Image 1 (cartoon, helix red, strand yellow):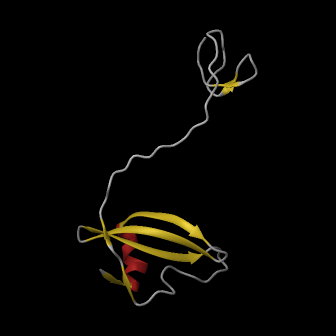
Image 2 (cartoon, helix red, strand yellow; image 1 turned 60 degrees about the vertical axis):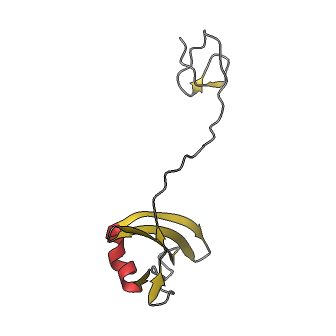
Image 3 (tube, helix red, strand yellow; image 1 turned 30 degrees about the vertical axis):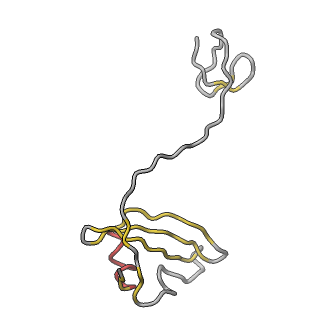
Length: 111
């Protein structure tokens, strides 16, 4: 669906579901944004000046009407990776993320 640049620039912000930083260049920061309009969700991208010295507002270099594809929410599972902590004997007196008697970082709370 096409939306007017002025709508996206000023009124869409009240209806924003998320606004994610997707990258940057020397002068611009690039965003991906999902907003809701009339019960439907739409995706748009825009860039803005990377510093106060760059005179670039969202959609400055886009046409007067911008195509925004309709999207839908989808729940996904994300796996993250965390640092392994050494396992210590029952006599370890370390507190969470402190250094234990063996002078190692430890997350066991065994007293």
